[in-house]
Image 1: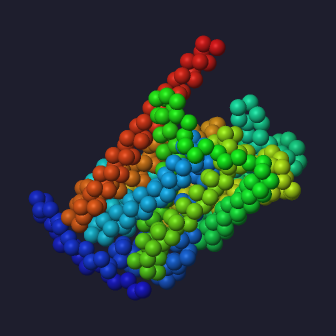
Image 2 (image 1 turned 60 degrees about the vertical axis):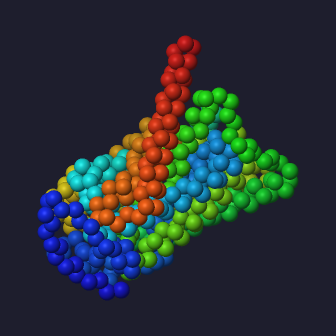
Image 3 (image 1 turned 180 degrees about the vertical axis):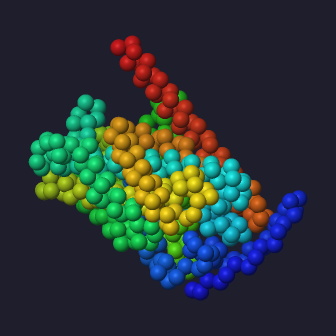
Length: 466
């Protein structure tokens, strides 16, 4: 596809509202320019359809897959699967809104779209949310990698890691050293790449590893089910009082975090050879991720039942009662640890971009300033490494990012853009669904935060009395 040059935009009067008619056949985003001299990108920057699917799928299927079995344990099989599917459809609509309103706004970034609708305040609010969400996500990645390779303790029980199980406990396979090597030897080199399409091969491998995890888990559960050694878990949640009902909403931030990919939608679209294909790419990616999420959550909950941990990978350190159990569980955990190592640079890309735009809004493009690029990379990697060594559980990180920045970035901001309707292109359906997204996000997050705070307060009171 040959991209044209944008024509000058006529200056608008301050008291005149701009109302534009959008050509449905037009590209989802305006023509793409390189970071210097306002010229078009060359063919080196063009990304393929399959590469975009892999990159977006990798953005979605990160650590969320490990927290979803615990969410399903809380909700029950029926509501859990229903909400996973529902969130996929809601996510598709929110991204559709972003792409639709980016066209008349001539915005090639999510922050540009927010600036068009809500000015500099909206842009800053989004950038802060992306930074909080992506830092939290990357910390979760590192926590899981540490759990898998070095082990973790939960409820007074120690779950040994792969390295600890193979070689015993040594200083070099302790959590801190393992995370340090992971940060410097794997994540840092991949995070130094300046184009997101450069990660398409590692993204394809990460998606393949996630599918391998699903296939092996499904095979293990099928074998145990045929042997009669598993029981069908609860179909509905266990609700006995108001507190237990409110606790159900704590699963919402985990589900929101599992589908957050909005910060990479525009960067992926910009690098496409034909950016009008982006909506199809979004749909295929979300369907793939929905299948992976549903299958993994169902079979992991079926396998471990009420013993399902916040990080389900930690459950795979026991003998599952099948042939080659130790070998299969080691393969499962190693596959997913490598998957997260390859996913991390995708989340890092959006984090670095938005942090730079927030701190240096008037500076020249980050990709042209190697010194600034390197310093931001080093600072972020160090901060994430420290956070992963001090935050005890992925559920805590999911709760914080999902209930705050996640819902804003994924649902509140796109819904608000549709309701603001800066260019007069929103349909009645857009506005109704926009209201629904905003109300649902605000209500569920408020209840989740209240329930978490209430549980923490009771726990602290119990500790003080003891």
